Length: 632
Image (cartoon, rainbow, N blue to C red; front, side):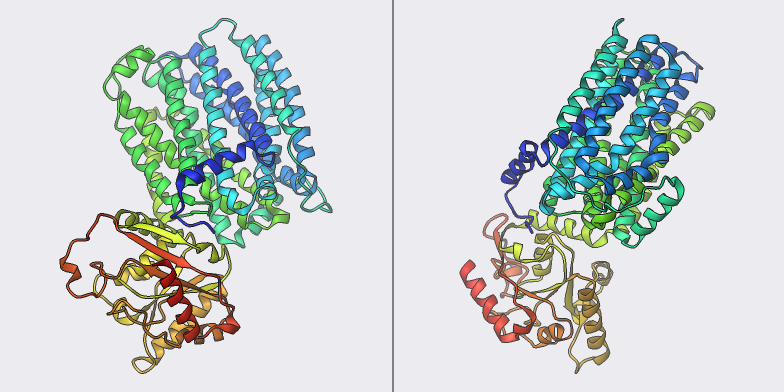
């Protein structure tokens, strides 16, 4: 496990190094090419029709945009279940090559549809594009866990999302540019065929990815298959809620991307170049948010970023809803100069960043926690839910914007309010992760944390952490430096401090005291500790039982032995340096003194785990003392 204190610059290079790896680079090229073509063809068609039919009181443009999106999305509902079965049954690289070859044929038909100017044929091509994308969907996310290491999963997903939304942006911008050219339909057709061929060439370089379940019998059961896969996902609540969260993300994303061109045309009375600029702001925001997520995650999954992303989407969306424009027939330069344009762009960028922070950890969580042999089918079920969410977005948009006459910025405001509700739900479901991130931000402001050896803490599975107790901030520093949630054991006298009990309950602190003081509390504490360990969690105890008054490590109490005796798990020794003498320690009158320097250095060290059969209070004290001395 990599800690939050690692060097960001080095890690960033490692993140982008995946693009040069055959394990990821060709897949990235396939994904980007496919996303570009899907959105380029759809956006070119929508832009050409919208800006040709836009007139006051004409609702046909709203209908065309949302119908086109619906035809591209509907195949995900119909075929994702079958696609997930194919992805689990067959070797993945060969299946990807077949799918990308079919895209060449579909784009050739799309070229003909654009030249003939047949709306019916154009919409048929959109449906065919959606079908091949539906079959590719489960492959692209189930392939990553087979080719990437667990610590590369977040980086891979971040790059994939960044590439996807950059491709969406480039496709949308190219479509916007084509509107002004008479030969735009010819250029659109040629570009789609060229990109489809490029995608197929990338697919030929994807390494072999063995079948997850070769004996699987294929059945096309859209409804029954969806229910079965969702039932499997529900067995792991984290996976299930991640799937629901991603459905909300695609609902929001579809609402913003699909409605922007008509918003620009009808509400702002601006040209296609302005639509391209607004789409660029949103999609670049999503890509930037995805990369920020990878930076903050430090190679671990950070579900606590999801509510932060949702909050950002909600706040930015609320502000966006309050921006109005009265100017008519805006060109790009005129738009940039008018009041409110800069804030509109900022709001869209922030909304996109929030979306990236929200989605990436959820994708990574599903890939890492879903059982390997059914991973594609669970992802396919998620794709069905995503498609239904996007269809629902289109239906709601058609109803509210076309028939109810709601302003699109008010529609965005409604989405923002719902996003704030999602923030509350996501915060409740990821409370320990969210607290850990908040603590990390706090301690980074107060101190410079230097971590060493924290890879000894397992990425998953139960363990007990033991550490010397120097200050009131010890638990916060440990919690913020470890990328897994930790249950801390706290003496009942601190737990009952007025005004803090609610926070300790939120952090799921385990209160404890001696048997002489209250046997019931002691027994309940050991029961809760055992339960947390049996569920594969991390528990941290300060075996001294109290803060040091001298700076030295006091005797370790035998409670740690009783914990491991009841639930045999490894024990990881930790040592803290640099907090003695701080205002949060018990050194006399230190609370009256300002620190000698801003953000002093704090060292947190760990060493290899002690097997449960070798655990004793005396031995653990010796290890922690030696670890503390070596790090001084």
